[in-house]
Length: 223
Image (cartoon, rainbow, N blue to C red; front, side, top):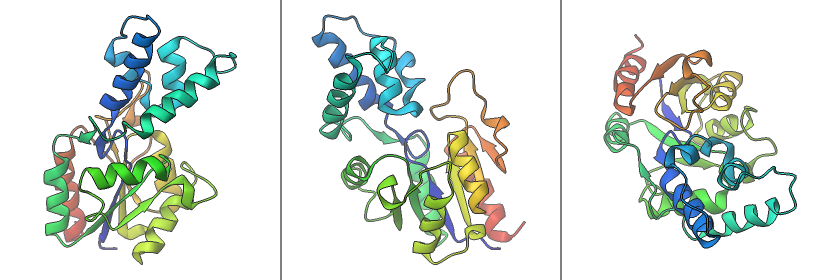
């Protein structure tokens, strides 16, 4: 089938949100008299969410009594700091222009809750351009379950095979394959050093967003 839409995971694929997570973690550590961590230490666990970042940032087991209050503080801070330093990855603005120029629609399918994803899209000027935004709030099962992608395709009025889903986590590729979309894994995202995007079974793997131009060209011509 001809490609009709491109769907992106948000963190680590469409947007580099790690700088905001890093800033919050370092601020919380500083207020407790702790030295800053290497930024890479935090960036490497972003895909694990607030739980992983708090566990790493404070060397705490999630079962520790102090853990949950720290996690709640982290999330409260993020609510007010979720689009301060976050920016599209290098090459994404040009890629979105290419997608729109080709008269394709694009959207976001993310495990990030709507209360964060919506203001980020709005503040970065992407909300009015995106055709669909699907978050865990909209479904009963998040990625790697295919429900989010199936909902996105239904909202767009297309068959899953007419969509390309791009992500930086095994869960993204598993969800895309289960839903029946085409899949692209990006190696530039928030991938743990022990992981490898080329082992996930995606249709293609790219190291930079602009490499997706060639994939889109082939999909549009049916090559």
